[in-house]
Length: 161
Image (tube, rainbow, N blue to C red; front, side, top):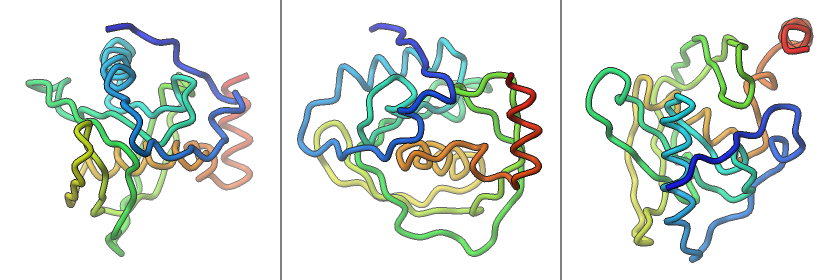
């Protein structure tokens, strides 16, 4: 496996809507993305963050506290979102050193395909729900800064420069 370079905001690919994966074999890229995520060290990583504008992400929300539990999501979609939202701090591997407060649904039901092409569905809660929403945002060309008010965004951008 290979550790890939992580694209940094404001690179254009981070603002692009990703193309579907479809039936393409993304195994090699998915395993390289997991290796990259662990090396970063992060808990989630989306295709555009490694320069691939395809609708896929990887995540492992438990590895820092215990055993690794890597997950790979191809062509994910949010099927349902809890009406209850939680506000919390979020960092992003593509915006290092910047933490923003983002409101997210407390729970989401997502559908995706796994590497074998099988359709999967699961309701995620807690940090897993937040992480999945963050990564799905990347697939839509949205970064954490896009969730901020104009004033808060200006402050965060000033901190990056």
